[in-house]
Image (cartoon, rainbow, N blue to C red):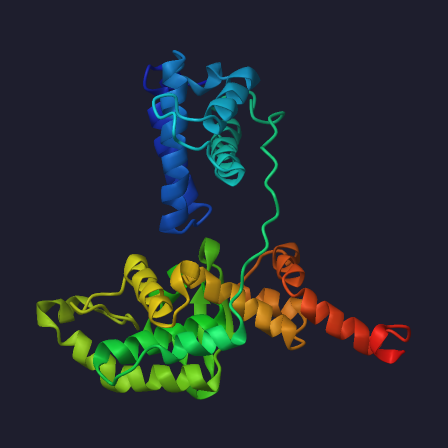
Length: 322
């Protein structure tokens, strides 16, 4: 092990190196990188509370103690709930990444996380909107002012493409090929994919780009900072994730859907409705940008009604054929 790692601040030094490696070598998106760093700051605080400031001194029992502590209710807040298993599992992924990095770079000899099991995460079933609910949501935006044109385009694109909210707000005008009904998206790990866009969404985008965006871009001196962003806020800057979330939430309230609506629900709804209407699961995987089809398969659990309809129409001994 190098002399630099034997110093009292070896933990800080290696965490900083690891963060650079995640950004440069693995190409993690800023939001994912922030999540890793939040989890690793908590982990570093836990290690120091146990008198450890050198990753080489971490053993499997200490990592297991961290997972147990991370899974428990916060001592000074008796009313707090224990973190969800998915949150603990995500934190352990960050810790594993850090220790694996330390081994690969020759800073430590062993990876103490190899024999540590993550908590079992129950498989959740996405709650999609019904098609009438989606129609009500899209119809909830009225008016022809710049914000209304933008908000209508946002809702149409989220539902038409199933893109993540981060992918939507990162869109630049150069990513749009509306004549071909396509949009280029940069997903997790900066992976590029091309996603089809339906005619209503293309029409909403074209109207917004022609009539709404120019007005937003003229908003004060911020117009010079807007760059090539597709979706702008009222100050002419690129729309943020939080701003987009608020737009979708407000539309859900106007449509009478309460707090059931957020951007990821439209992603779920896009996937579910594609499968309901006969799309191949591999196609849905490509549209959503899932690295593995197993991630997409969760949507096949959503529509029991679709399963019954297909079964009844196909099986020779089904109820509808008797």
